[in-house]
Length: 314
Image (cartoon, rainbow, N blue to C red):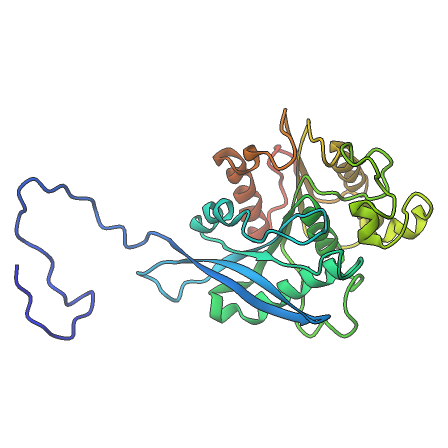
């Protein structure tokens, strides 16, 4: 089939009409979502460091102006320097389902103590809201998600987004409020005596949580309460989904249990999934069934429906 040179659009370019012996055909999937990876987007410069985002952007070629909800994901790292690329492929599955997924770099504990990490996560939310047009984001449909220490940061950022705590002074020109919070095996209580089974120096100044706070937590438990999620359970914040493995040897499942029970006691909108037999950062947290749970939770948050995945309404 010969096509003369010209200025064609999709609508005007002739379709192939000739049959090709032995060729197979697939139907046109013009509405399919493709995902483009935009690496190392600087969203903030602070303390001499450029903080970056890894952006996974869904696009529909047939609808190039379509906007999508956004998931701001905080990568865990024991609050130390992060591997920002670890979950690019895992989050790509969620991006293909129609979510702009953004992996956040925060100031790690080697250069800044708490609450710098929470402040940075809030600025990442603000950046995505301020740049909604550029990244095709629905500005009122942003959720926070994180794993391990990133779960801790995401939870605290989400729980204090409306109260203004743990934030830069005067930073509220662009709001950092979110519609939902997803916590994957988060280290949400640095003060729990048995919260870190594989950390021999747990809570000492040399431990990951001690480096985060900048002091020996055992000697200053009350001072460390500012970094404990249950401190903020009576604030006004978005619905939360918590997932934790029952055989987690890095962050004790009890941390999530106590947060869940505290949220329930306050009548908060929360769902809790125990991942039976799963270890810390287990691959099961990214299986199709788990992604289905995350997506169902996000869709309900976006729709303003507070019913949880376990069949209860709060």
